[in-house]
Length: 282
View 1 (tube, rainbow, N blue to C red):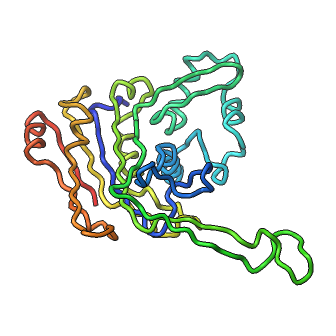
View 2 (cartoon, helix red, strand yellow; view 1 turned 135 degrees about the vertical axis):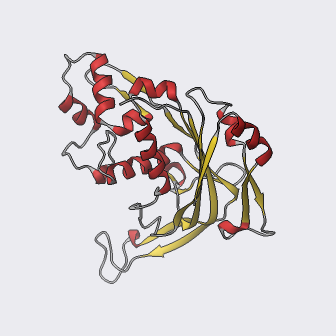
View 3 (cartoon, helix red, strand yellow; view 1 turned 135 degrees about the horizontal axis):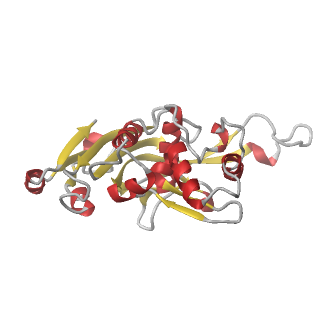
């Protein structure tokens, strides 16, 4: 099976409605934001959700979250050493890892086991998510009706009180690209690119939690750009900048319809003449 035949760029928009899209552990798990108050979701968190979707659709992945372990190996080291002994060459480790695990083939991986360090550079790069506007982070005090620890009769233990944080509403933008040169190194194919696209479209399926109730996060729109060849007809930055956002709401946005998101048709026309195509998925 041949590797990726054409460079791909993409732009994803998703909404957050009364949820914590990515808590910051150094800030009491409050939703991540920059110094200006714009919401952020780390690229690591987005790749985690993509990995989960790969796993949901029956594909083997190397970096499995703890609650999704299905092979009995509770660590990356255990999973690695079960497959490879220290006599296997670096070249064979790279080859077999990419053949076995879709996330390694897509994102790459650093294997620091058996007293060696093997770096695999993947073709799929993803930016952090950034909200289109400043987000309102709501703090809610919560209690539970039972003690978590022993307490004096008739009194509450200290752990019955807690705090939850969530974003009232926000639309986040994520940019990404798939590089044909690195696809050749890992064996990433056109079929794999379709799997990435499907995973992006369904990013928040099977992702519910107390911080992210079912339906509180949704993919709103995906722009999928395909170049005419492996090197591309223009830079990734130029393609990402084709997507333009206009704010329609006078106050704080409360729905995706409060934005007008369009393509710069004048610039797109010149790239289309060179063979760039775009698929818009809603």
